[in-house]
Length: 80
Image (cartoon, rainbow, N blue to C red):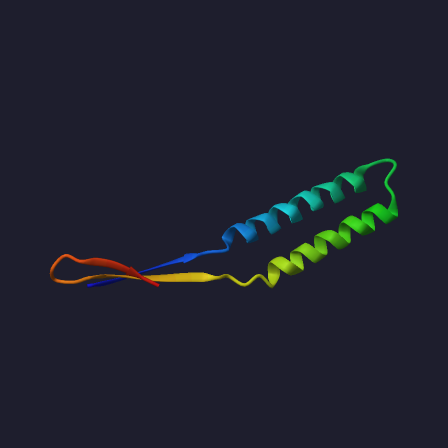
């Protein structure tokens, strides 16, 4: 019998990118609401958020597929 399983190997990279975009967007929001906001700082943060979102949009998932084979004698082996 053959069992096939798959998992996304690089999902933590995507999670880090999303976290960074969230933090930068929160900083941007705070800067916009600030009474002493600087247009240069707003533009810098906006560019960071846009850049990170573009990286997220172009993210390529790396999927690992494993086959586990069990023969009639009870042997189980894992193969990539």
